[in-house]
Image (cartoon, rainbow, N blue to C red; front, side, top):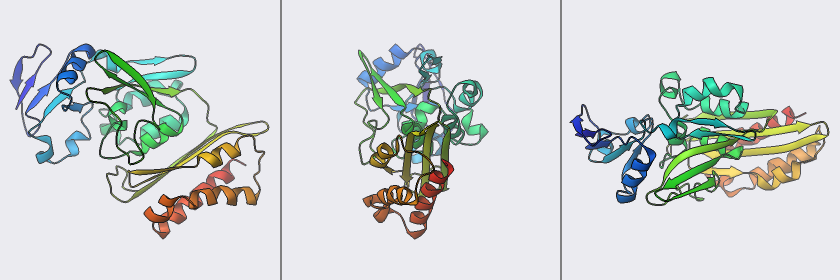
Length: 292
């Protein structure tokens, strides 16, 4: 195994890992490498990569982005905050406490225990090909966008467009996640509950995510989603629209109608067992009751 520094100078490597670790010193250099080697693996914080088996980790060329200063910036504007893809989650919990929405902070806290959060990056967490993490489901719910860049081109996509319905990442050859943009909206109520594996990759798990904002007249905004086994998501878009402007407390009929919209989803019936269905329906009901 060999590592390459900013000037391409090889140095000795240690332990099982990729056959070649390339460390570009700038974003331009990284994008140029991706243009010519679009199949290269991306290393942000490396926490997910290091969980893979030695057979998966070896025999690959890896592009490590930790030395790219452009990807470690956090910029706040009046309406959103832009977070570089390699900013550690632990840093965001400290600095972001002053301005990030509480639901976003709660989601970032679930990236892992402190030793993991201090290394894991938010860009890496949302771009894992094999699974969708709870933090991804929560950030998608509050309208987070992702910047994708390749040499000579950049584009912003919503996290809802970042994966196709099967969960596959929509990243073109040569593209890499460079920034995340989180709207600075105040959510007065939120919930994130995970049952089963906290870092799902096809393993049995269920995450419930909800967010709502209230004003003097009632519900100003409402969001709710389910993440099943880290692969499939349910979003109650029609019910979310219907709830905007509703006065609280909601009637029992209103609550039953919203819960029925969840239970009628094909994923709810086919991918959840009886306990999972009860947890999902009960979790939605409890969140609706909290708004009152």
